[in-house]
Length: 403
Ligand code: ASP
Ligand code: MG
Image (spheres, rainbow, N blue to C red):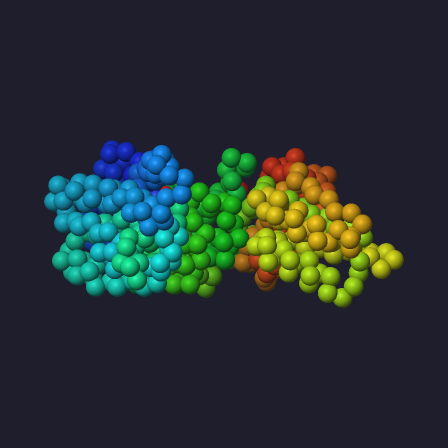
């Protein structure tokens, strides 16, 4: 098999840990696989470099920041390659440029445009392990080094796996996979063997520390089998993130996600005329505000009530947009002591009674549901934040996710 492995900052955070990663690679090589490893900078390194720059300027040139930050990943790739060579494994480090990664010109947030795999294929044919410095490429126009945005090494790994048609892309962090819910909230949470791309994207809050969302989207697009596993317990099989067709037994519910960063916006007594929803939500979209759940209730006397949720980070911008609708609304209020709990599962598509079970589970705990929204594979409910953990545990229990 051809395996692309990615080791995050914590996994290469010290010299001992870099040796540990070398040992993981040696074992996989000994099993007869070809290996391309993508590495992050040692943990804390990228932030340290940014602080250095801030010492000289509040507004450094983006292409200089890329020159600076790309060095962090290069250090790890070279050290890892040196460690492997010393132990008799043929290895070679590659910068993003050497790995053939060409990006657009958007320094510090570049997008990968293409990957020329010739260099990597030649090295593999020579029996070499390739260690690629993650998070970087070269711009197509000025041929300067570029970086892909924070956490971008995951993208490097997925993009390479897609371009070179690797059998699997294993993302090593300090967590051994994706769990049915946050184990800090529900200690009985179980590690999932398999999960579909779409479920993973909906459960983003559970994978947040493990997988960058952009890279899951890319894996879906390029059809790359992703595995989330730990470099600290490499003997433990992680979670496979793959396309739905590859999952034979589809659980009705795969996991419970919690989002505490939502604010509920209530617009009461909105003049009920055709086009009002369109003008409100167009104005919010124009301000780049990510509206999530929306409910409109039947009003009285030619008015209606609208409730919707937004990320807390968009709150100030949202207030500005709401100013425009003051004259058409009796009252606008905000509630940030709420949270959103979601149950996610592809099996929902073909089962009935999934939603009612969730509602009963919360009712049994006397938890009031403020807003409900559903999609094909997700049911989300807004509840008071003080019930967040109780709600997660009640739902985890209702769908027997600990079994
Ligand atoms: N070192 C970069 C960062 O900290 C990229 C990465 O780790 O994926 O954002
Ligand atoms: Mg990282």
